[in-house]
Length: 430
Ligand code: NAD
Image 1 (cartoon, rainbow, N blue to C red):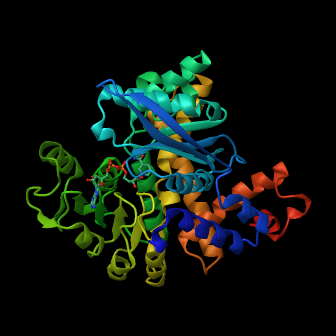
Image 2: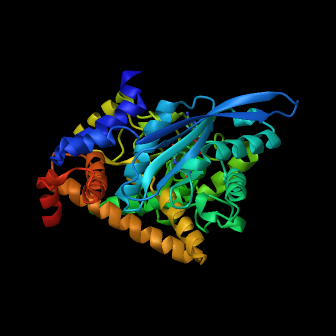
């Protein structure tokens, strides 16, 4: 398990980037844990009249760059340690794309599939009552994550608004469009991922026309990445979901795949395709591999067999640290999760901006601004990677991100008077 402890992995990633930038030790000492964590007990009346007490968490990693931002996860295996690690990743995901936020994350240990809609609503409202002192449009702005959705965000926003006695649309993002949600939010993670894949293919000289793409996971992120890459001319040669997969070297139409999955519950058995397993997909001969399912899918054993030229991490944490080293040796270009999956939080930021100004954008405006931010972030990470030849794209992304957070801490005076050192001079001349 040691290798796969998310909290330790997050600490190692921060340490590697901070050392590479010769930052003062205080930067790592501050960033190696969340600045504030809260554990709450939430009593909920169940439909049978009994009371069940659920445990919930909110971890706030670092507020130097601005208000805190991060999703709320409903899952039976949610732990404080996991929520803490996820809050750390959120700080760097926001910083790598230059959003004015620090990272946070929340969660409740529960199985939402076992709860009735009424129980789910009471649990969601109880969680907001419990964490209300910590959150707010200018303090900490939750969002959806695993097993939470727009309806849950609507209940949470409503509960917070009742407590504060005004319509606090900006307290939560990922809301329904009818309640201040943003157009384009549903597709944003996938769109951001497709944009950075296109940029990476460009710098590698890999034509997208006819490029062979394999996608692991055919949910929100995976199915839309497949559709957008197909629109850019790529051939979608393999997709898998939790029940099985489909392979066709001629390429498959993602719209037809999605319609087939909507009918049958899986992409397995798609007409004209051969069955393929998740493991076979990860190691197949292709140009672009998009892990868009779960964490720790590309293990060292898988990495040794990966044949793709580009791995774009739409999922959070799909590659283990050991596998990362192997991919680097094999010169596979990995677009790390904090960059490749940052489109979602970027459009969440747009939602918050729209809520705060009361002026709502068209979908073209949302997509245009997302394109601009993702292209700029890719360029900054790629330039950092080119400048420091001994780092991979992941460390480069952390370097871009940590430099931003450290600058914010330094000018706030958190690092002391002597902190303007080589990393800042380097930043000014870069
Ligand atoms: P989702 O639940 O919509 O889809 C997940 C997909 O993965 C499903 O098709 C499921 O069948 C498949 N899957 C599950 N286990 C699998 C297995 N063992 N092998 C192959 N496929 C399997 O989830 P999503 O929103 O698309 O999120 C996917 C990943 O992207 C997660 O890591 C998530 O944290 C990350 N992510 C999502 C967003 C977003 O806005 N949706 C934002 C950032 C990161």
